[in-house]
Image 1 (tube, rainbow, N blue to C red):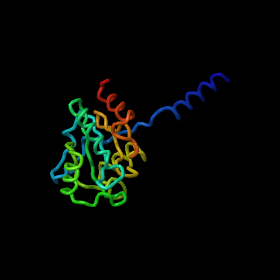
Image 2: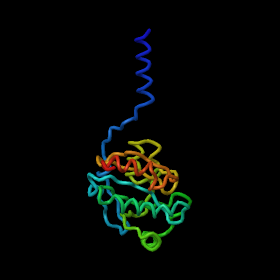
Image 3: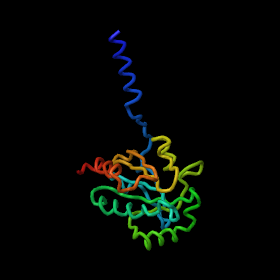
Image 4: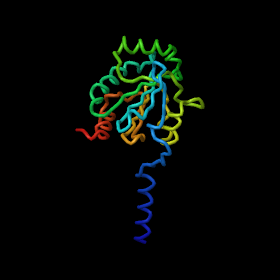
Length: 185
């Protein structure tokens, strides 16, 4: 009977305490986007860096998070982190402007200097392949439910964690994960 309990215990631990790992066929660095100026942005240029990928919007209650995103960028860019803002108009029509409008808004209101992409879909059938990849490899928590959803990519180009819109970029939860990936205290 003891052997049976040990086996049940092992099965329980495997089922409930291990994180599912994906068989990544591609990694983050294999994808391309266009930057906010319409130029091709090959994500392989960020190879060996951690990336905080955030779908953003100019007219959202969470828009003030641009300030925290800029702070994270300023604090960690020289230590191996890249922040990428990804405008999307899929949540309440809160990013209706052109790329030029978005770029101007971010510069004037938040002095954003981190990389920004052109406006794309981040969920649904028309989602950019990068966001489809995130779902395929990490599950539902990688699908943005609203603006300012965050996906943290490790230095190997795999998803490390995801964070809801309510989680501030400068939260202990995110900064702890960034420091873990970057091997800093």
